[in-house]
Image (cartoon, rainbow, N blue to C red; front, top):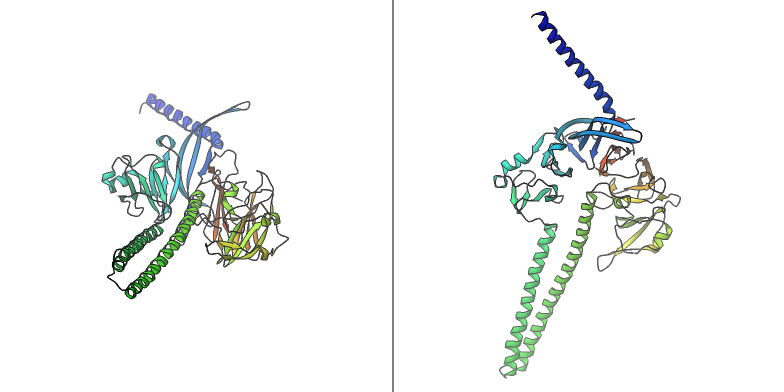
Length: 478
């Protein structure tokens, strides 16, 4: 190679190297302005001996940053990944980029639910991800290959998809307006009208309605036979009084049996409707708990029942004014220093639980919980029960106002505190209880956008202790 060519190539590589070094120097300076957070709502998975927390992570990579007085100008590129964390240690196991923000046409981005050991999420399209390998098990292309009739008809907007926690199936409206059920195991979709009603209760209600129609038909037929036959024959003198009396007695006896059957069906139907209304209310509560960033009062309840006993967290004044019908409702005074009450209850003829307030006692009169409530189980919509139903999780504040941190205590049915934990969070974005662990998601960094979190606590429920992983710094905190 000639000296001139060597000089040219040498200069080229020198300039290229300088540009690369300059880029990394600039990148190093800008990286401190990067923002990393988790999209609020994560999932817990177990497989063999491994357990993970699965999350969607948003990463804002800063490309320019300037400050002029109090005005900050910043530009960034955004990408979305899925991530798995060790459920016991909190440490990150793996991360896999899914999409850049500019490739996503419609928002929001969120996790829908778990089914068949896979995480279902909406990230510009419907996706199923293996939480352990982080590989996509299903996306738009795979779903269209499985369902040729729906090619080009899977909607691109989140609003048209619904994950049903009762059967772990996905219901959606295709772009042509037809309704479908997507089997989350086979990925095959079938035409289906979605209904919130519990299938078993719906079948029972339909069966009761059939029985009511049969009963009404039998009563009408019996009356028609008696009026058109027995009465007319006797009135026409074609039947003796003795025979008419015998037939009348049989008629009224049969009628009374049918009336009792009618009344019994009515009672069963009324009880079923009440049960259905209660389940609907509970179902609505479970659906509301799927949301993230709920208010403090939305994540707890002030009373519970267990093994024929009633338990409540109230001030003496709140308890005195409490309606004696059991309800899973929270009390709403943030300044209330509540105490633990126990009493028994009875079930009335309307299947309502009636508290025996006169027999109530406070087993730990020196223990107080500021704005205390029983923590709700997101799967059931009722307070969490631990250790074979012998322990509750109680949430309360360390001080009044928006700056109060949420405290957590495990308390047994006798009012004895087993341990206490300070979450160091004013609000919980989400939580998951497995029975052995409690995972708490929140935010303690003002740089994190609304609806996103940077804190993941992994609490061992036997000790009330556990590690803290920070999505923002991508590291465990000491």
